[in-house]
Image (cartoon, rainbow, N blue to C red; front, side):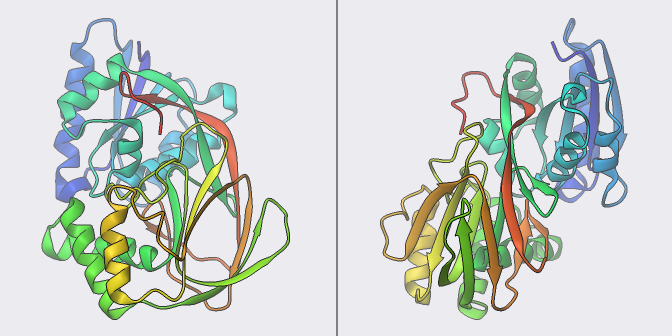
Length: 308
């Protein structure tokens, strides 16, 4: 039973389809007898609205987020601002271009199917990542992959393309025209500093980013660990493209220069500022202290979903 439910929806999601999707989800939730004691719907109009709505959601039992990874990012940050005992559980109806957090939860991309999954799903105590006081639900990344994620935002608006096709087109452009090496310093779990050069680094809560690329295929939602993938320089353009293709199914780990590990905390800095994205949104700081809030949110996963 979802109890008193607040639907937080981005009406602009999927090029304007988010509005109708939210109304459809509301009708379906109201029509399931015994599922919700009440259903309220709010729509975002500007950046920060979803976070504000979630931060004011004490008293609700469930938040249903209708949107993509960026909207989920805001909702998650709002929920974490509440006392743990007052945080509603979180459910997702995916309406983004990448939908990687929804993939981690096993959610279908049909509104009808996703609502059915929410009503029949189970609750997992999910981890949340942190960076300089900002939470991330799925990913923060640096370098080439962040450049790809940020390029997809403009490319989606210009072309109307979504999903894997969108990310593949951005990847080709970034590999051919924008691939750079970045010197970095990294401390893992308070250990000695490591110096190196990378073309990309991803820090994950769930396994995928970029519309299903399994960059950290063994990442779990509830293990209290950050999963890290570093692609050390140098990597040529052709090899980079091949590794990118292999990463779709998590088969990139064996390549020389690919370093995958887990940690509870990281301290990261760069010689020159790389592109940075957090849950698909642009982000920049001088240094990046990364940590984890273990099992900070109650999240609904699809029935029989193996937590990843």
